[in-house]
Amino acid sequence: MSGSDDLKCDTATADDEKEITELLVNNFRAPLGVALNVTNDDVATFLPDMVKTALTSPLSMVTRNEEGKIIAVQLVTVHNRHDEQEEHNWNDEALTEKAAKIAKFLAHMEGDLWKLVPSDINCLMRFALTFVMPEYQRHGIARRLSSMRLDAAKQLGCQGITTTSVNIKSQKLRMSEGFEVVKEVKYSDWLDENGKVIFDIKDGSDRCIVTFRRL
Image 1 (cartoon, one colour):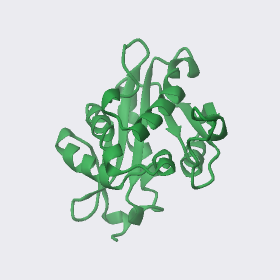
Image 2: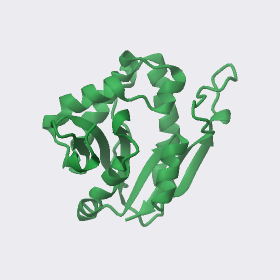
Image 3: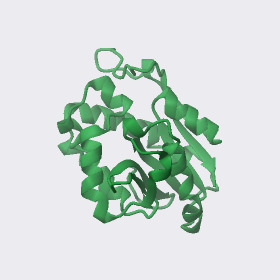
Image 4: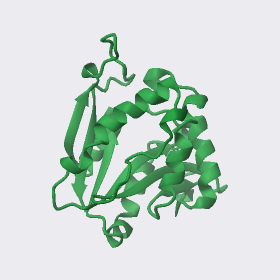
């Protein structure tokens, strides 16, 4: 692996859509997905729509190695309080059973977002997804991506940032960046129709949190 000095961060564009989608479908396994043992087929029912939506925002970022290959991505969306805009843009009918379980949980976590943030906040930057290839992790890439587009977000009228963190690692990162928890759900309270826990997060995380901070 090259050193972090050989890596280049760029604004993600529509030209990157295919490479980002393939990278995520083949490699990205969020803790919720790992808990359900999702396959590429499951992920492919929602990630492509997620990528397409995020690339309409000028705030999404990619990191490339010295060969020009994308090795990290942060998908960012912009949300306005008075827009009739869905938090997630995927086709519910196309979701597999496992993908639908994840979608339902995320809708519960984020569906009342505007009730969670201060009433004077009308435009939000949302970190929808952050992924760094395993061999490039622990080099501060995720933190770097999170900090690079803040001025641009302000110019777009964003007054705050929000993100949903499902595991301990990402939660610690957001807390260190000055985010505050505005909602949390313990996985032990999220049960299926038989009363069994749906998400047994492998790293020991016991809850999912929605966080917010002002810009």
